[in-house]
View 1 (cartoon, protein in one colour):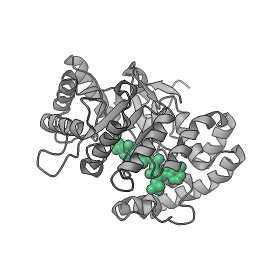
View 2 (spheres, protein in one colour):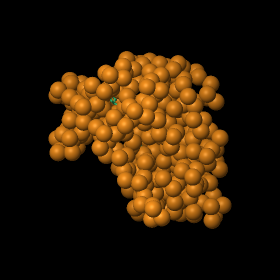
View 3 (cartoon, helix red, strand yellow):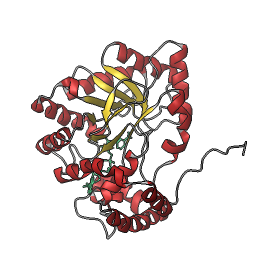
Length: 332
Ligand SMILES: NC(=O)c1ccc[n+]([C@@H]2O[C@H](COP(=O)([O-])OP(=O)(O)OC[C@H]3O[C@@H](n4cnc5c(N)ncnc54)[C@H](OP(=O)(O)O)[C@@H]3O)[C@@H](O)[C@H]2O)c1
């Protein structure tokens, strides 16, 4: 395993990490979660990702149970949670001071830990002033309930505003973003956040590196039984990923990527994950899995990054044909 600094901080996260969205509490019970997390841990994963929203807290409870059972040294782990969707009450959602305090405390209980290393604002909250959120996150950190805070799916402008408020008010600034990033979803990580990497030292913990499984090729000939896009509850995801014109185009590209993976002697999941790992602005690639075999396969992506040399990356680029345009250089 490779360990990368999370942005400009001194914290190191495993380049491949493990998260529990969709899976824990839906496809994965406590026993399987233990086996999956142990497999990931044994492969060198130190960062485990969660959120108060995942299965309404059940996902955190399962992870907390696994951590208790495994008895790993707390200092060997980087744990996260994300705050935004905590329940149905008027104050159970969003990024108010109240929900950040109460949501964080409830998450820590479920995770059976005194602190999370990383805490994320799971989405921007259009109703809470960013200054209120920055103050709340600063307070959570001052109280020792989290060590670093960041955002998820915030625009570059929102991140910059939060950062500037924190600097002006001598509060802890956001360190990391958790954006979607994969071969089909590139704009934010490759273009929109470009200035933030150097300017504020932004780190990224990227999600859905396999586009929910699409990039494994498993949907090339229909929907396998029990797969994510076969789950009733995630019908909306199936509609987006498979039943739109854009979705169909993506599937065609996946089919074209398959022979290239074969030529390189790697699997499709390896290729898609290694492709994300190649981006130096990616601090960690959060993987997800519904069984232990997938965890093993995904961890093996680490070994094949070298196979994606310039020539291979160019061939992938030709097939994807979706590279975000660089900023216009007006001096040329
Ligand atoms: N911040 C956010 O808003 C946000 C949003 C989403 C996710 N996340 C985080 O990011 C993590 C990863 O996201 P994700 O689960 O969407 O990642 P992903 O890698 O795009 O999809 C993972 C899913 O793909 C399938 N899969 C994984 N490895 C496979 C393999 N080797 N072969 C075949 N199928 C495979 C599994 O689904 P099936 O076997 O069921 O088909 C698995 O659950 C989450 O757990 C969560 O921690 C964050």
